Image (cartoon, rainbow, N blue to C red; front, side, top):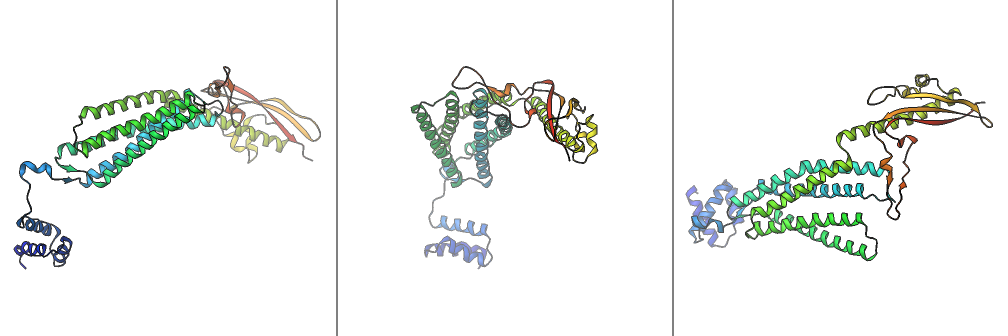
Length: 385
């Protein structure tokens, strides 16, 4: 068969009722390429009377989205999830900071809140600009490509987002009404509920308009979508400013990390001094003496993580016999802290006008003021027989 006869071959098989797949398989089997088969099949259809669009009516014919456009759209949904989750987590952390729960406050929860706020801020700084770029590219393809039709995957993902946003809004409203009827609604709960409602509502509104423009070809001005973008940008900027207040600036976090290391070092030194007293039945004259035994030598090397200076140590009371077979002594350790933990551990309770002190977890050094701080430790040793 000559190449010019492929169109005739296809035309005859179309008229006989054979499917395109069957025709394609036969022609491929003898060496025809996919492009040659498609071109010849199109020519055969035209010859059989299938109408061809005129130049001015090309918009009436669908142009499928390319693989790149599908990837951009899918990437935008991933970024949307990152931005929405980060924005909610950021404002939840801010609410927890300004409206703490007196019944559920601890140093661990404060640390976790700060970490969540900082991670959310980083996710928004990176994710939101990328989301804006991805959405601009998505709208640009449909604005410039007349008659372009999105893929089924993009369509279903968009409707999935609308469904999740709708369910979230309904569930949030039910939760608010339920709390109100039980008389347990608080400022903190109301603000968190409003945060969820605002985020879900804005996502639903944006993609509702996106469906009108992309799928149903309705006129929605670019300014409308720009308003969504600017509104989100303002909310994010406000969240970043409040996030620095709630979570602390990078400089503050660095000082807090130094303080946490100092607290850990002092607790280790306390343990080593107790072990030394148990081995030698006396207190060390200086921290350098801790090098005498293997299990305490590591503590002799501990220094202030910021300045490199040795921690201060002095004996308050030498070991004296107290009771049968027990000797007791006291020593003092000092360090200079950058920040105070006291303010972070005092919260206002919901039910009274006073203040409730939340005891710190961990060692005695978990709580400390800013500046030079000294604390006395007691050591108790069983006398060896």
